[in-house]
Image (cartoon, rainbow, N blue to C red; front, side):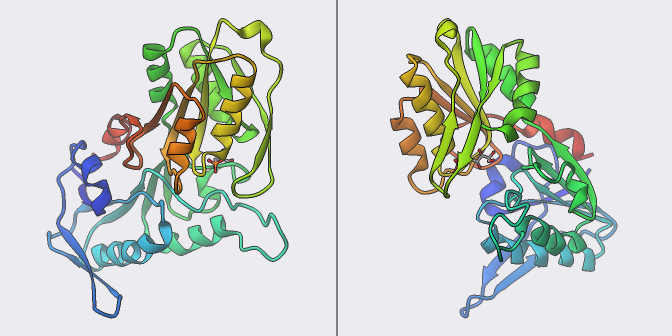
Length: 286
Ligand code: R5P
C-alpha cells in the first residue's frame, strides 16, 4: 500500500484514509529557509504526498523539496494528492502582461511528480489536467457526494450553477439527484465584485434552491446568487461547494447573507465541512 506523507493541516484527512503514514518533518532555519527531512524508509516503495494547495506560495517549496527527497531516497513512485489544486483559475492572460499561472505552476510541479491526484480542479479553458501537467493525472469529483447529500437533506431541490464553469458539475449532480437545474450567467468585475443574471423563477416557488460551485473564495459569487434568490422570495437556500477556501471574512459574510446551510467537502479543513472525500481517495491508495 502507498506510504502517505501528509502536510500538517491534512493530518485529520490522512487519519481517515487506510494508507500507512510516513514520518517527515519540515522546519525553518533561523533565516527562514526550509529544511525537510524524511524519517521513514521509502526505498522501493510507492509514496504519496497529501497536500491541498490553498495558500500555495508557502507550501510549494517544501512540497518540491519533499517530493525530490523521496525520489533521492529511492521511492519507486511519488504521487501528489492535492485534494484542492491551486493556481488553476488564471488559465489565460485576462489582462495584458499578466502571467498565465495555471500553466507556469504546472510547469514548476510536473518534473517532481510521477502522478497527480486531485478533486474537481478548475478545468475551464484547459479541458484536461494532462494538457498542462506532464505526469499521470487522475481527476476525481465530489459531485456524487453532493448529489447524495442533497438527496438525504433537501426535499424538492433545484440545483443552481452560478456561472458557465459550473455547468459540468451541476448537470451531473442534477442527473444523480433527479432534480431540475439552472445555470446562471456571471460577469466578474474584480476579485470581489460579480454580476449574476438570475431568470425569473416565480413558477418555481415549490423548489428549494441548492447553489453549487467548485470553490468558495471571497464568497462574492455565492452571496450575489443568494441575494437574487431571496429577492425572488426564496427563504430556504443551501450552498454546496467542493473547496472551502473562504478568504478573510468570506464565511461570516455568506452566513449573514441568509443561507440556510453551507456545506463543503473536506478537501480543505473548515467548519463547513460536511462531505467526506476519503471514499473518493481510498481506491487510489492501493
Ligand atoms: C470561478 O469560475 C469559480 O468556479 C468560482 O465561482 C469562484 O472561484 C468563486 O469565487 P468567489 O467566492 O471569490 O466569488
